[in-house]
Amino acid sequence: MRQRRAGKALTAAVAVATAALVLSACAAGQAGKAKPSGFLGDYSKLHAGAEGQALMVYRAPNATIAHYTKIMIDPVTIWRDADTKDIPPQEAQDLIEDLDDVLRMTLDDDYQIVKQAGPDVLRLRAAITEAEGSWRVVDGRLGDRLDSDLQAVNPNPPSNDTRSFVGKAGIEAELLDSVSGVRIAAAIDRRVGARSFKPDANKWEDVENAFRYWAERLRDRLRELRKSK
Image (cartoon, rainbow, N blue to C red; front, side, top):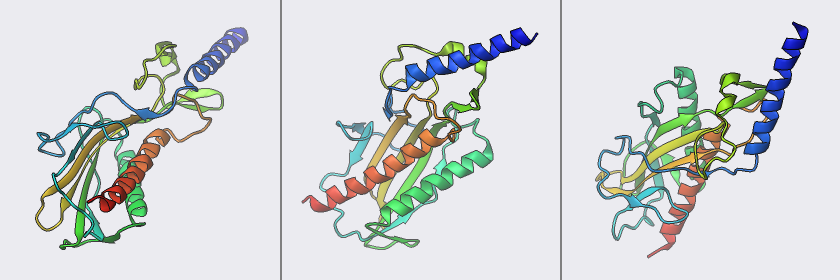
């Protein structure tokens, strides 16, 4: 009996180590195709983004944003569908608060955060449309998913694939004139985490990293647009 248990423990340890070696070299990045959720309503004017942009983007022709000095951020939501329906309520609330916090802290560098519309106020709407936690290693064993699923490890995963131990996240967002409601810009994006094991890591770490990436990218893009004619 002891030998059998030792054998199982050794097998699990070897599987964890093998998967870690397989996955650790794969970097985080953009993933797959855009998956419109319905949050934005009208997708007719969105088109494929260029390199360095979201998967699908829209910018109103001749739109200028230099006169906006404030921003109103609507409460972040999770768009409940097949990709998010199984997230436990408390974890869903934690993700909502995390994205809301990172957007406010990042955009506060350049804008006054306000609660009322005005001629100098941008309005930001954002929703989490996809969120899946990653594998964790706890005391040498996989946590949060069944060890038996290790058999599904793909030793040669396609680039930007979302399988095998990675966290993934999707977002839809739009910027509006807060008074008229006219859409100034919109985007849909999806990201996957790095394929690597981190002992005792938060299983939502890849998702939270995606939130930070999107917030910083939005801040930088707004800076670029303010400088453009």
